[in-house]
Image (cartoon, rainbow, N blue to C red; front, top):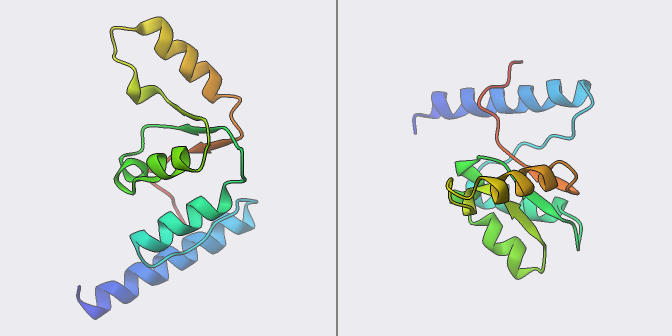
Amino acid sequence: MDPIKTWYAEDRGKRAVEALKKRGFTAFYVENQDQAKEMTLKEIPPGAVVAVGGSGTIRGLKIIEDLRARGHKVLDHWEVPYSRVEESFQIRRAQQTSDVFLTSSNAITL
């Protein structure tokens, strides 16, 4: 990537993290996918029930597989076919009381 674009993306990411922190969020800046995965897994306490929203990023990083390998119960409504409406509803309902909810953000403003 162009060094100026890299600097710009890093600067915006770090500014977004600071803005989120000022508003009471816990936020981290990481430079790559490996760091993102490592940080995410590090932040999830042992034994936590983890719900997953509609994040392709979470799935792409293979975090769900790692959580299951660590013994976490993972609530993922994407695993239920649309035809099983009641089962999907029950999983989504259980997700509301999970210990951790993993999702992505489509937009964050500074």
